[in-house]
Length: 84
Image (tube, rainbow, N blue to C red):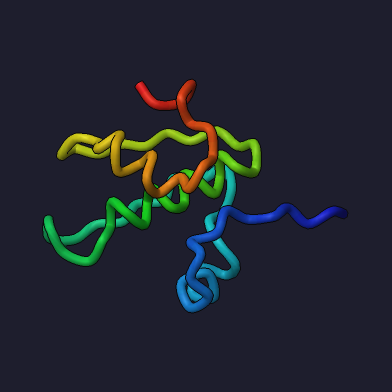
């Protein structure tokens, strides 16, 4: 059985705690007080990682998604057709 590559957070200790990255096919929620900890940035990193692996992503942000920041985090991954 071929092992699937998991979307990575790009930080070894976070990927380690998450057993290598995000588990495909499940909903993952990061939560905490607003304006602390970089939750939105971490979600964007995981979203870009999943997209670069050819996966689909649903990104819910109750505060409003910064498409400009998402494009910065993407580091050149083409997201134009994904950002609405």
